[in-house]
Each structure stands twice: as structure tokens, then as C-alpha cells.
Length: 386
Image 1: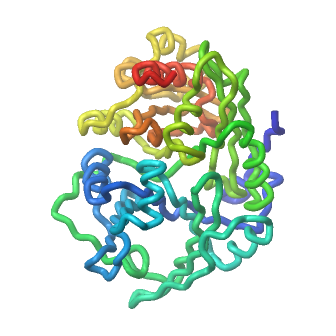
Image 2: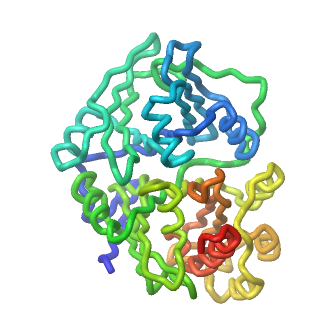
């Protein structure tokens, strides 16, 4: 198990000892999904998750090869992109993987320097530093490949005042369902193939200056049937967190193996989105048609006071309501957290979402792993993929 890196206070930020500062990241800029039908996908994410129309590019804006709809909710920018021709790399990506995350865009102060620092350390180029301009200013973007066909784009927008990027127009729509309290991306989890977790941990350490501050092995993450291993990578200020999973040997096929089979390679497994009121958010998501994994057994909720210990004093949520909504609870030294996971949001059992509310806790719900994976296995059994 890797050495745990302890966070220390430095002004208002959490700086992880051992993290390198050659790649300062200001946060997640946007997440782009390649999808089969962006117009319909945009309607889905607006209707169910409460995203709002924000920006658009397509034939009307001069884009001849793709259409992109940009959705916004608080600090989250979600881009949905579809190809306009069958021979497009976007079409090939969707044909192979189905709907999935292609680009994790990271907000930086200097996209050229970010590109230089990562490529000289071994990163494979996706996009050379490129200046894009319109009447609102300029944006500099560059990009590198990470696991599978997933990409990290570095986005420098300090000299830009437009809605999103040059080439996009503000998207005005009469249909904008109310937001549901989603605030920002807490973390994004990647699934990689057998024996590939440690090489990618090393890649994030050496190429991007991240640190491995939490590790879980198959002794901690297992059920009667399956197991996996996971390591959590974070940049220096703790704003970007990328857990990386790989399969482990078990009696049956794990959720990671199922993902790799249907996604046909490594990729983003789920996006965790933060909320300040998970009960209200989950109630609204359920009312709008989002399906979640089944609840743990009643014994799980009966045991919550024992697992939370002293943190029960600060907990104001009703455990009965949490059980009714299938929201799980965990705690660490700094507080507790509440989390719930959707079923896959497309027909392939690949990408799903996590809704999370942190009440001081910095972990990832390790105490919930067994209950979570048993719930996933119940879904796998229905699909005949366990």
C-alpha cells in the first residue's frame, strides 16, 4: 500500500506534501462527452440533471464536422459533442466506446507551459498549443492523452470574456428546467486494464506532478464474488482528484471488467458531482427519472451511529430518509460524507454519476465499498455480466 500523503494547511488551500508545482491547476474547466446524438443528450441532461443551456457550435456557427452543446450548472460545464460525418474521429470513438468522456479539460494560467512541462516528461501529444480568437478575446488550449483514448486539455482563458470558447455562440433556449443543486465536480474515476493501475499512477506522478494520497487493495474492496484495486491521485492544491481503478482476481467478473469489456478499453467510469443538500438533490433526480443503485440492507443503516462515532453529533440528516432514498453514509477523521450512485446513463453498462455531499470528510466512502459493490453486482446479475 502506498504511503499516505498528509494534507497540511497553507493559507486557504490544501497542499499535499510531496506534490510538485510544475503544473499548477486552477480547477476543472469542462468535461466533454462524445455522444451519438448531442441534441437528444442535451435534452436528457437538462431535463434530469437540471443543467441549463449555455453555448453552442454547429453548422449555424460554421462548424462543418461536429455539433457541440454546452450545458452549465453552477461551476460545472458539460459539453456534448456529436460528429456530422461518419468518417470523423468522433464517430469512430462513439462506435467503439458508446457515449463516454473524451476530454477532461483543466483550467490553467499558462496552457503553453502546461503542455511543455508534461510533454517533456513523456506525455503523448493530443493538441499542440493553439490560440483561438474572436471578438471576445482569445483562449489558448493544448492537450495530452492519458489512459485509453481519454484526453486532458489545458485551457487558458484569462484573456477571454465570451460565453465558452471562440467558435461558440451563446445558446438561448426557452426550455431550461430548474437546477437541482449540483455545484462542482468533486472527482472523476478512471478504469484501466489488468496490471495498469500502477503504471498510470506513476504517469500521473511523473508527468503531471500528482501524488497518490489514498490506496485501496483487493483486501479492502471485495465481495463474495469480485474485487478491485484503486489509488487516488491528486494535484498539489487538492482541487483535481482522479481515482484510478483496475480489476482484481475474484470468483466472478468485477464491475471493472464489465466496464472494460463494454467500453472496449480504459476510460472514465464515473463523474462525482458535489451538492450542498443531497437529500433535496436526490429527491429531485428521482422525480425526474434518474435511476439509482438499490439501497443497502436495513442493517447498514442501523449500524450508522457506530460507524460515524463522534460525527453523529454534527449529523442533521434523518437516517430514515437516507435509507428511503438509498443514500450511503461514511466518515473519516475530519467529518462525514453522504453519497449515492446512479445506474449507467446509457445502454452500455459504462459511464455513471455519483452525487456526493461532504461534511468535512476528505475520503471517498471506503466504509461504503462493500455495500456499493454488492449493489452493483445485483445489477450485473440482472444483465448476465457477473
